[in-house]
Image (cartoon, rainbow, N blue to C red; front, side, top):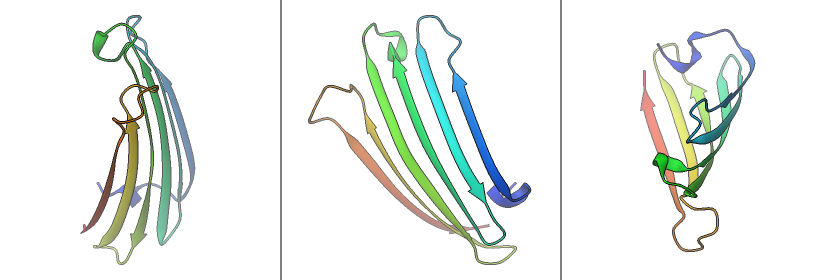
Length: 100
């Protein structure tokens, strides 16, 4: 179902990874209204992919405009750093879409 299929309002979720070899924390905060929605994400992972001392962080957000009951316009921007202490390996992604 589309992102706006649930009732309007504030949502918050936090998860802590259960795998002992991989430690992760994810937090997502969002607000959904009648004509728009907005959300933000933060995630940090230690021992990523089971590799000792491999760390990464991701941060980003999305906005959604509900143009009609059938059509949405959505944009998102995310940044990631595969190892929190490297200066030249970060990457980012900007996405834009129109759809049902």
